[in-house]
Amino acid sequence: MENCIFCYPDLDKNQKIILENDYCLYLQQEIQEIVGSGLIVPKAHKETLFDLSDKEWAATRDLLQQAKDYIDKDIKPDGYNVGWNCMEVGGQHIFHAHLHVIPRFIDEPMAGKGIRYLFKSKENQRPRIL
Image 1: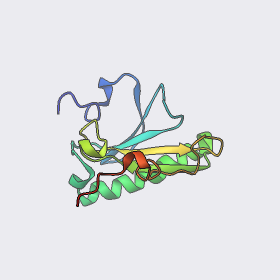
Image 2: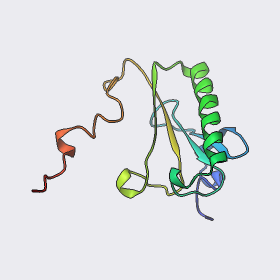
Image 3: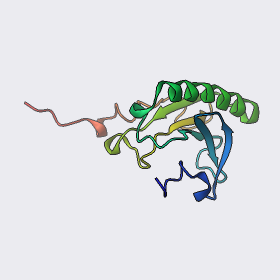
């Protein structure tokens, strides 16, 4: 994919490679919406996590541990959210698989809510089909 910012990280000047292995990159934005957050992406263009090979899965796991160690040393968070958005309805906006690594802090207004908090809200309830 010639215009994919994960296949070609240099296309996004705000993005930098922090860590890498043979199959994956750990990227962070220079200007971050969430301090310390980043993404793990396969080097090969794969649309969702369901398309990853066994080697890419293993490399993702290895890089996740390295990213955690890097973030822990740098900003010492109190917890993490780690997750994938898959396909449009699942919240994916860039169609190259990417694992969100988000450090969390005890003093955040939403601390302790977890990734399912919004899914369980009344606003997200599906209509009941009878």
